[in-house]
Image (tube, rainbow, N blue to C red; front, side, top):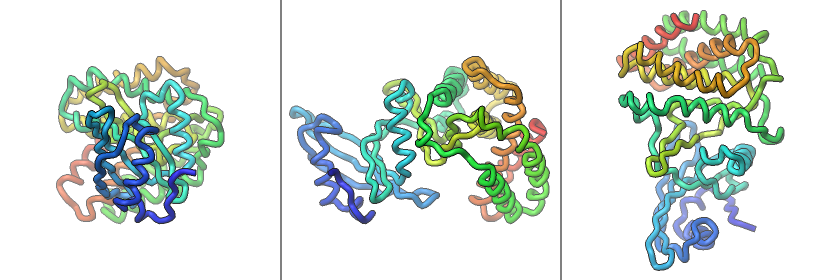
Length: 325
């Protein structure tokens, strides 16, 4: 029947988790036995459970080390990831092992890589690889996904989210709030006729950005993480989300000419791999505005009082406003 603890504290129990991984040694890793297990609880911003299980194993007399991540995840998302794993885009995912329904908790093998954001100062890295990220996104979006795996993003959810974002910005700084109110009004005014064309909807990650793409140096491969927000929505949102996050990040380190050349390298492969419908460019521009609001509200939430660092972020968002509006 598997291992389904009723309480989350069982996930921190050395005795219970030792027993669990002993029974899974052969299935998961082809190992003979579990030698030792260490458990490291982690904190997350959203309050989800996140645990690292560090295993020492024995396989044919040789020692083997494995890191297993346990994370709170909805069953729908876990089934989506298992489905993806069976397709050609499975190479862009870590190995997801098992789901514990009683806790809404999933286990996956540690990717043992680095966020691509950590390469932010290395222009050569971005010049070589940035086109791959839009190609990965296009492959995810082209995959035909069973309807039961993804809910369609509702327009009322979007309106609530945008208004909530503006409220956080306004609470942080009334001056910034007035500035971003113009952005919100423009976005909502153009949202209905341009973005809500359901026949164009596809897989949307909703957080496709440099913090959620990891580079595995051992295999020279990239993997995509954090599918908690995934929905069926307009494909331009992920493209715009990556573009804005990268732009804000890169402007600290590279000249504007270099940044724009990288943005072009990111966008062109995507346009070549997808058959874009009429109005896609307009949606892309609108979702850039949405992402600016998103970054601004995160800045307002993290920096409760004015600081030099938060002001730098708002300054970069001002630059983007001039480009987008």
